[in-house]
Image 1 (cartoon, rainbow, N blue to C red):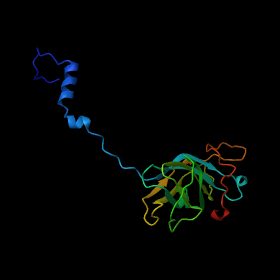
Image 2: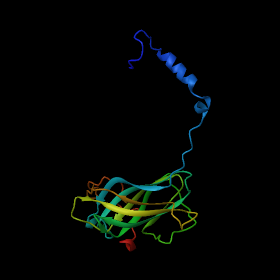
Image 3: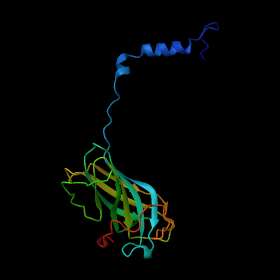
Length: 204
């Protein structure tokens, strides 16, 4: 409280302060709409869950599975296609396969083009306004209980697959990798096995 105020002064009531503040605010500010926020481009994010695939869980992959989400905000750029590259586990480059496990809402993803670097092992299509659960299976495994996966990706609008609308590098950070087995194991990722859709042996 300022020492310049007189001792005998009476502070204004709370109602007076509120009334005065409301009266002092210009009408244009009160009535003005919030600025429009541009829709964000689609992107990938790790969920923090990963599991180890023992040798008897798959004849194709003896490695890890990492869970990601792909989010394509409605009205951003329409349907998109994403190409994943430079996947490494604990700093070691690895073979990999990208699989769409499920989507909300479910539905087809028509795409009028395909990036030059896309193939069935490293790319996927995300419809406008959809969030997908993405699995990345790797063909590298270490003795460590934890694993850190890094990757790069580029996302293109399905109307123009020459210039990406987003490029980024991701790292999972060290995550625990409990084993997954057909019996369940202690893997925290739901519905890894049986593999559906089936894995492509050309990607191992």
